[in-house]
Image (cartoon, rainbow, N blue to C red):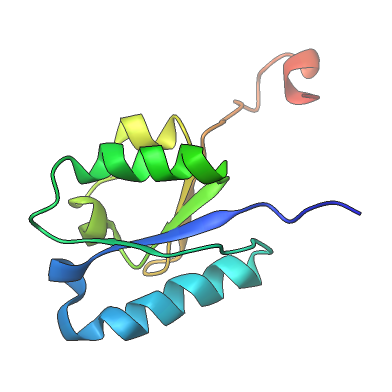
Length: 114
């Protein structure tokens, strides 16, 4: 049997505010709906030094396949290139996926087959 891919819900407590429990439920629910296992949620505050690098470290420590965020506001308004090079990023609102690997439709067949 195959193991389910892993996703880590991530949020900023200062962005969520009083909605933090709801944001956690939303990110975990979307990850599970997409078929991911969810070992833990990561929540950093505005006082966290280098939160994106710390998130990347957490992703690598559990070999996660995706990070799920309530919205791009939790990542500073954009998906950091350094993050999407390591892991897929999924947003709850609006529901979108930012994939690590993008293969252009005009790529050679041997590239698309990978």
